[in-house]
Image (cartoon, rainbow, N blue to C red; front, side):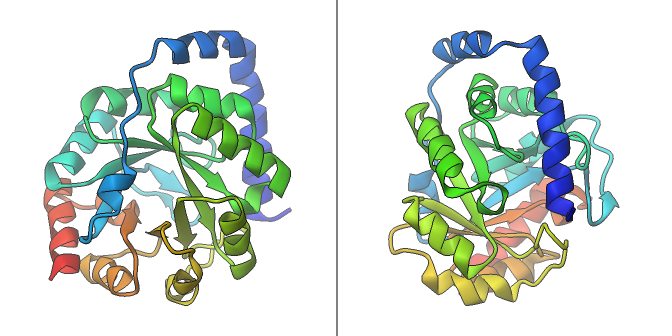
Length: 261
């Protein structure tokens, strides 16, 4: 079993526990009463680079990253610095995230919010919308084409924007076949945890015209954001480098300034 397989097994167990507490019918009712989603693609398509700033306590590759007692405050600082969207890790076993973090961030900021998790079941899509997220992540590596298309279709039906993530050329072709408008290329291979930022440089040109390109993982400082943008990234998702920054707002500003020259 590789790293991703282990994570997915835990995700399904934790989801089953939540399903026992909150029924799908209850989630549907919450979604019916939820405020409209915030559009994000128009911002991402602007010529200058956008930053998705991530609330992330730990990772399977690095362990504990930062003590984040107040995710809402951190998210507000990201937004103050100019982040176009906030990503919130909600996977609990390997990333120490939660839906409570998502709720707190949603209540604190006006910018779009991404639920970053391992979405494998329609229940999670309803859950994502019920908790106020505007975007969700779908990882090509985690599912076959049929379930991926089902989840993407449901997300679109509920108004969510989906970040479809690839790491290989084959996964990128699958993302394109799904008609994904927001495509992430992850420098980290979640099956091995190895990071190679040039994966984005190699695969970026193959992203279909009109789709927004997101560079994920491997950012240590402003120069990495600038390089990703030079390689064609419209958006750069940054987690570790921001949660470890002493001044999150200023860190976001420095990343944007570096990419914008």
